[in-house]
Image (cartoon, rainbow, N blue to C red):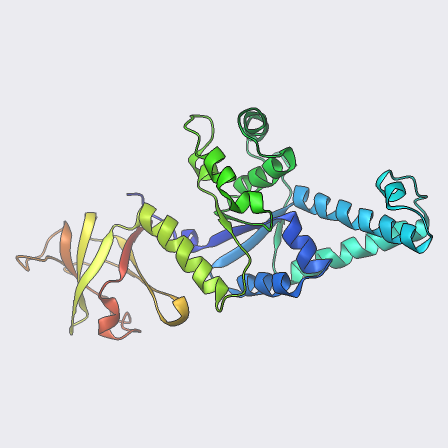
Length: 308
């Protein structure tokens, strides 16, 4: 089992173009409030890409042209064919709407990644595009959004596109092949809903389904009054290791404690003798790690951290 870093606790969510449009341009208050709730969660990070923003800007331009056509008794078809005169007034209107949408995204802390920068773009990006075009039924524009999520190292994709939330995409990406990386096939898809505490629930579901299954090394099985806890682990821990204990409390809120195993603080669970390493052990917590009541420790999930 790999060690993790504290930054791995972050759920990075890629925001699709249709969500940006519904939140900042249309606007749809359900989408806007859902996005705002996600952005306020301390363990969730929202990102997007230049490609998604270009799609958003194209939508703004089209809507501006269509609105102008309607006002001047011209047809929707004319706007679609770009046959209207792109006046200075229209250009300024488009520019202003793009600026306002960008400012609203920045206010929510949505980070934009410039994927066209070679330093950011995955080296196999274009090979993945071609592979998915040949071997799947996913539309090219959706492939670019999916690979944008992958290239920004996102664990989830927030989209209103039913194709991302349906069985087709999941089936297509489960193809048994050596070209597509696991991180691409493991991207999960988040649906927008009206449930209470959506961000806490979305985070907990992702944490348990992805991070906990992938990297947890065991659990705490008992606790004692002298700040000692008993751990049942899948792999050995040793003196000096950093451990992370995690539990979800009220309202599905993440609670955690980080500590280092100190000298003479690791004992074998059965013999109660000092050991250098072990799987079923008791660990004495350092002073200052009693911010939760002692019964909190039972059934907490244990992760091994890289040195911090």
